[in-house]
Length: 321
Picture 1 (cartoon, rainbow, N blue to C red):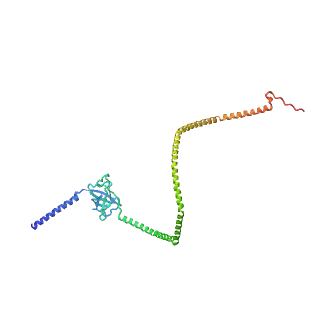
Picture 2: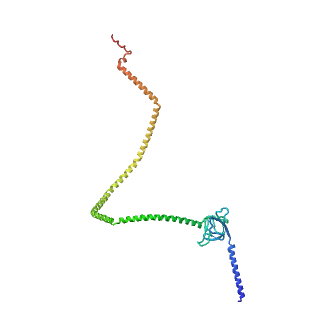
Picture 3: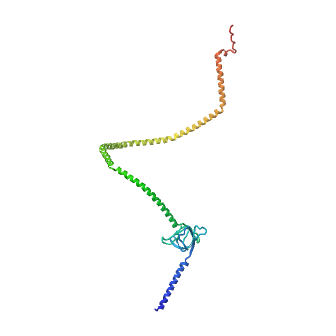
């Protein structure tokens, strides 16, 4: 094979590889249909055109435009394009994220919910703010300041605790001194002597307690039938009370009815007395007058009994002169 043939084969091979590369790139860039969406964040964090768009951690598109939103300057408008068929839904949330700590910032979209309606092209994806590095630095600074105050407070409290610990150790040293040890030894010796002296009495007391326990067991055994009889008596008494309960209730009901009738009769009598009050007073007054007249008549009869026989009373005799 001459050199010209080899050069021709090499050129043809390069052209074939170039054609395959162009075909592959064309399929990747122009063969795949992309769907546009929008989202808004207050902090973009280095996201720019060409940044990855992740759906559940999977790369599904690229960021097309990042710009300040003219309707609200406090928010950043991010236009992105994702592969057609990506199941974005109304529960999906876009936020600033990345695949790893060393990778470039990306827009991470959650998978949302199976039951949520799908988003149409051009609709807005709900967003969630991510803490920026500046916010994290400010929080760490506040934590550091609080830690310094806490350390200062702990140091001051440790000084007080150290002083109290020294006082406690001094007191312990004083308590465990030779004089106190002698006193404790003497107390222990006296306790041992007392235990040795009182041990026989304690044994006798223990025997008596055991005997009393035995007697108590026998008494309890004897009291068992008495308790059973008492239970039977109570059962009979309960049955008797149950039998007498209904007649007593009936008698009480009749007594209550009688009392109601007596109450109504007394009320009627009060009404009659009140209505005839004037007549009763007049009758009593007539009886009083008749009684007084009868008293006067009786006195006259006693003084002049002849008045019952003679119609006219004789004249009184004149006194002789």
